[in-house]
Length: 216
Image 1 (cartoon, rainbow, N blue to C red):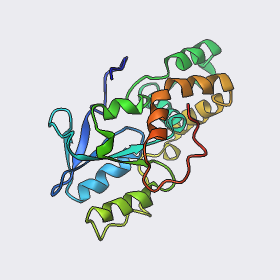
Image 2: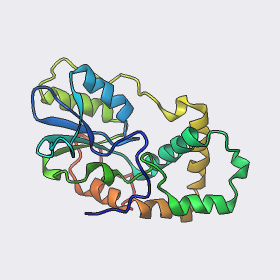
Image 3: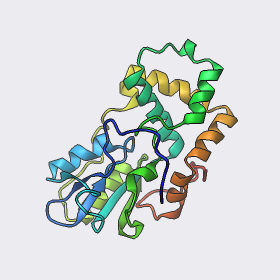
Image 4: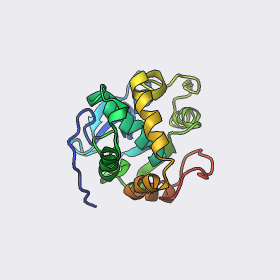
């Protein structure tokens, strides 16, 4: 499937993955889906960075971490503005500018559709997890099933969170409040309809019923 991609990756090359040293397992990086927490944990276990497109690894079994598209967009758009426009005054966000943001939706890899990151991967060769409250426990459980008997990441603190960055938190609060407007919320949901389709069509490892996630 082809996608229109209006941006060039700045920090996350598409296809980036981490592979296990002793078996055909890989973790595929999707930005804003607990990736800053996951990558160093795998590196501790000897996993190394590759690119599944360039290194022809699509036959590996993939760990894919997905996230509620609305929550991910709020976090992603906050990161985009904190990285590239940290000095914007929120008072300058007039209706025309807000409407432009809501029409564009996708500005960089932090706000990109999650499906961009998993192109050409066979869903039948994947374990899918949600980046939710259960993720650390599910991640630990899955690793144990792969033979890493002594790991325990259930209490390891998340890294690079919005709440720990005042500028990012400012923008996240602003955009989350904007989505109280049903028209804006519907634009976001419609834009990420392919991500919703994936989330609702795959079997999710260890996750509770997705009652809080719209179908998009």
